[in-house]
Length: 445
Image 1 (tube, rainbow, N blue to C red):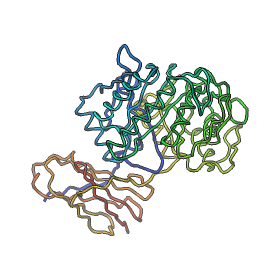
Image 2: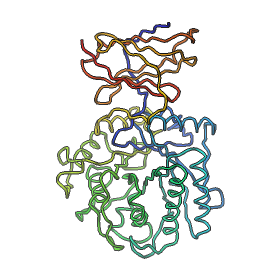
Image 3: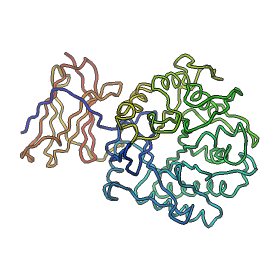
Image 4: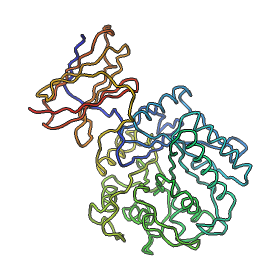
């Protein structure tokens, strides 16, 4: 039997799936200031990862393609599987700032649907994020409930077809997210023409299927709030006013846009100063604004909520981008993710049920100054053990893969010292090769 002693220390390791969502964009390219990272390097607070981007193939604006860069297809698919096994959603994002997508007729729509389904099936994505910019959507007339422009109508029908096919193939609902710029949504209060309000028919038609919308509250000009006042980006008033517009609904020249549910709305902000041209807000100010929006704090600016109780069920936060959040040269490492945890709190990890589990023994329980985790032989030494408190915070993490030994056919016993932890109930997760075993642990000094 190999005995390993672990004294202290915890690391960002195992993923969580809280009731809230932290959505982040993973950049499928390398940037000198914001380098490429592996999917498995993503901070564990992120539980919706938007892979950026599926883009039209050369010579078209409707035939979509995606190939992972900086990583092989096989390794990319394995990493997607790993994140999904941890309860995360990994979705493919369509478009981005530099790639217009426009479906002019039924033929182009059919090609778009087929190409997107091929991407989803090839990589095992959980769904689609719609991030169309650069004139991909434009309106010339009609109303929110009755659009007349073929690219808008065709996109709505295409997404419905993709969702239906996904459900038929996988037996479950496809994840659908949207990341419009403010001009496409709240901009409808200023005008309903061209880009102004152009996302509203899409949101309306798909609202029953929409999981989360996270309007980009950055790289934006000033926008009206539903109180008739104008608010500037980069302020707490902008966060509160633009989010409440979605939560209360608003009137446009194309008709009334009906309110969305709070659990469909997340706050979209840049990860750090350099991640966007404008709109970055200090983390403390972000917390003040979101606390007020949820009815948990005082008003941080001039905008007053229409609903004085706030929106406690607000879904979470989104950022551009995960890569920017990781770098230490633009704010501190994982600054956005940590602020999300400060605002929304942490919840215990939830893993999908497994047909098999690890034959783990845990003793003594209750534990005083230490406990032992006994595990079966593992030739890869690939166990990862994480101890969580009841707030869902990882207080210790042990990775047996860092151990070097030759006793791969012997049981592994890990002695974990917990004299530095308070008394109470904890949850221990042990993970190996996609299998997860959970045990409750009581610490009583």
